[in-house]
Length: 318
Image (tube, rainbow, N blue to C red; front, side, top):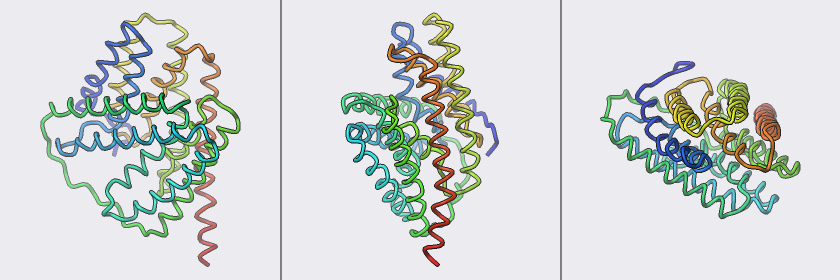
């Protein structure tokens, strides 16, 4: 996998799935940005080689929607929310060690982090609306992908086998990072208490080298995306310019989805922060500091948990 990969196939898919958001932005930027958020999970996947593989985007969309809805259901009770994050991380990590449980891995990689996104929704009603947008966006992206013909792809390498005990340790590791991130968000009373939790779970990986890469890559991508969103908002662009820019952002995000560098958060941050900047409840500086600051907290928690929990586990075994 190249450090910064580009796929015209994926880029064209991103442009098409971003078209409804761009059209809606011409009349109402808030609706346009909401539609763009709905297709973000599909944009991060790109177009798989076969139509059968592309159906996975529907599964991923369902997992994302359920996770967001669950987070919004528990966010009013912070203690319960923190407990749910930790317990779900541990249970899903252990289940992922069993190769026969095919859904455990996508839930671990995407579903659990998006539980943190759900914690940032103020009510179940808004969580339900967000889940609905994700489901609709995933379905639309899947239907659009069927236009592309099947292409040949080599066999995917099987991941090395992982023991249940190792995944238990990993589950505790990410569970602590995510739960502490959520607890900090609730304790500080930030507008989006799940951001640190999401950042911690998004960058966490069992492979230490990959964790380091994602650990520095995500903050850089978030800072660049946030600065771009603030700069565009400060210009007060015409709706036509905003519509074109939104489609371009989704095109670039999807076209580079296969990169080894962690660049997708740049595009997702731009879209999410642009939507927040349309609200009257905070200044650009407020949203920038919260988004970047809580991301840095989450990354620090992920790195700290990866350094401490496995070491403690080894001592316990001895």
